[in-house]
Image (cartoon, rainbow, N blue to C red):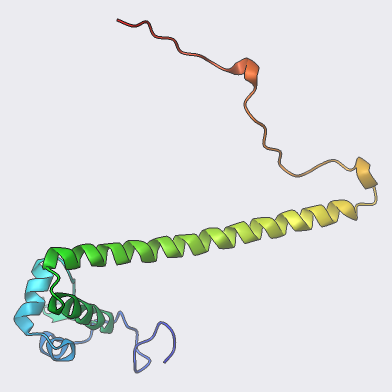
Length: 148
């Protein structure tokens, strides 16, 4: 199975299953799926006529919800767990982005340093790297308030 694809090479976000098929695939009753939608745990796609269509990813989410509730976790607990899992996923993605950005910055710094070392003008070459300076102590401002 290709990463990002469903079991048959289909897009896992493609809303293709009607409610009866989604219920059968998830092992839940169709009314339970409607209840979970009403509670905001799942949001199936809709057809032009308003019929629900579930994706493979929706089916997987329904299975997770079913496992959590069958282990004794209440609906609000399930909602909180799903919210936290979504936040963890988002933070992990952001962390990967920041790590890639850091690595690109380090590479650019290495290249700039290597280029400076090989510059034919030698040590007299101007420094083109940004310099971070602390605040000027002479430009500090102190706010004083009289006690009442």
